Image 1 (tube, helix red, strand yellow):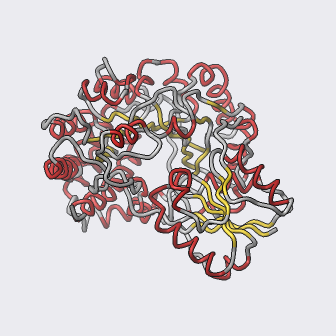
Image 2: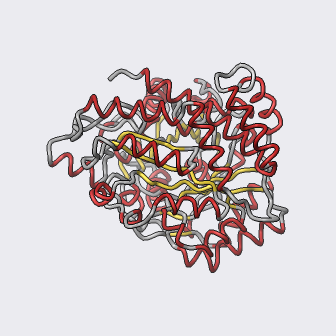
Length: 497
């Protein structure tokens, strides 16, 4: 059996970092972890190939080589996925599809030959059994949660790791919190499920043996969902492995704001090699936090929490949302003020989106306020529901917010605020990503000479070189990020209302 695994094109968005990747000569941020994991679940005797449309092209010859084409996609990849499915159908090659896009919209893909939905560890064996017997069905669904001890090491050999800026691995699924707008608990449940220590170390070792050095993203939606297991088993084991291997990686992940309450956990994460964490802050308004059920963010000084995490040695990236029912007219100014004061340089601000499978989607449906489905881009100005705030005021305020925080003066000021607060572990290692020197010279030319931010660039350049030389590479990295963010912000300003 010959299997072609195809990952559709990911549009140019905030998290694509496409404009920043050019500085380090990479094609995409990460390889398709889900497809590579599925590939490892297929019979070893089968021939397998990967085509990631974010790093290479898909030819008719690629499709015609295969007996089946496996496709996995996020909602934002829908148009590319549809094009791939159409080409396979025209060439007479059967398709097998799964992943968030097809879970949410499986009824809209009748042209897919086989839909394998839910967690692959549960549903894929059912499909493979039927395929072996020669009677594969059209739809496979199972609501059971997978035992992650059955999850194999991704088949990294299928991917050209040199084309990616970072690698990604998964330690856990599920989140103990249940925010109204989030689809994670619907997909993976509220009880965190984790891999064994031995599995995690095997995945790190497999990347190390394939020659990878640099960043690894733990894709868990809330890495600290089981804090006790992290502190007693996982982090000590990662730290010991990193010490044996000479700290070849640095890690970043996603976590809830209550990370700030656990000094021991933060210290252990830093000692294990974690340098960055994304946190969903969403809003500073208590009534909005009550509305959306984000209990972990309530009754706390969010600004102080962010600074505690930064001072513990973790750079904080933040998610923010406008468009909640309880948002006051002042929400845009309060978001700007918090983002600037916190030093969160990477501030992903989006307009609220109602995703299928969320409590928000169900509520808005009952209220008759849905006007379409989400396109997966949470920075699009095409709302899929009727907001309480007047629509034009919401979009205008959102665009002004983005223009403000990503204007060179404000962005570079925020980077300097972060670097003042950020405290890397004393005596610890500060890993520099591959391609850094080339990126440095490109940044000098494109940002320091040609860029409209050249004044701010040189101010940051010399300030960090003289005052904070240890984090000078980080300063250059954030300067390059800022270039990407401004490109995305400009594109949002051009979107039709």
